[in-house]
Length: 342
Image 1 (cartoon, rainbow, N blue to C red):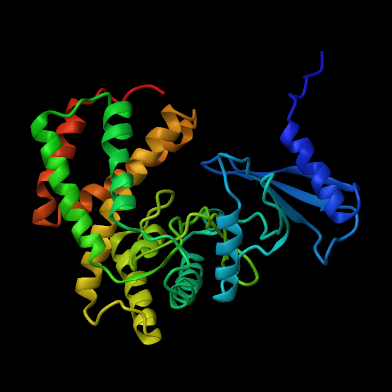
Image 2 (cartoon, one colour):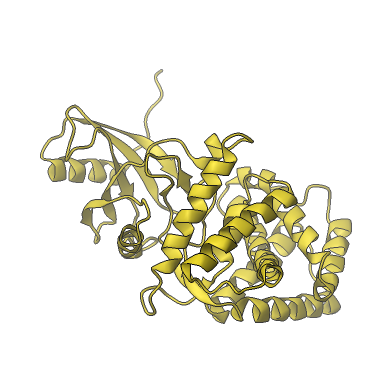
């Protein structure tokens, strides 16, 4: 018997909304991508170009789990900053539907190799500087201590507790708390700019106006090194540290010349970068564990070793992070091989 396609009322409703918005039902609708949330994206291919575009993207962001308003707001900020983000052509915020311009199918992750990386990262850092230069107080939520700390808490809850199946001892919990306090103090001391929050190879598209930037709805105002960490210590692709430093220097020089608050001493900037990276890597390990064990997305487990390698290397370079490195060693030794099954 032929396979039965499961009912998908939201897809049907989205298709009907797109037809009404375009004034024609004569288009194909196919999955474009999904991300680590409830959002889904569909590529619309009309028989005839619509609004000057051969293809469009329809976003399904079901309330109450998702809210389209931050996406629309941040898209406007990016475009105003001279960054290539999707244009919002139509919206039904109450139902969680957006019609967007299409930035294509080729991500940075698809395109990056030794030959393409220099120009692609140059474009990405140039766009990052433009985004940061556009920063204005009050436009985005603050990346404050409460939010940074909530992110850090994902590590003991989901990575240690759920993925490794380990309950921290009282001494280990104290070590982690003290490490978190040191990390937060360093992160919160940094100058604040607009932060995309996931500025990496899966969210950057190879475009004519390069890069196209996606998945920006969680943008905040926070530490100046955060997005550069996301870019250069990417959970999905790794580069030798000397290459990371070279690209970081190029960004820092560009940012200084543009008047961004990156300081006159690259060594101090790099230390801030590394401490910001420790926060992000602890968060990402927790998020990947949660995606696996709560959401059934086990594919993220394959990227955990890359993230852990970044974390361990940074912890090994700073005396204040030595106890955290020792804790990571202890957890690794106590965990079952490969952690707990999904």
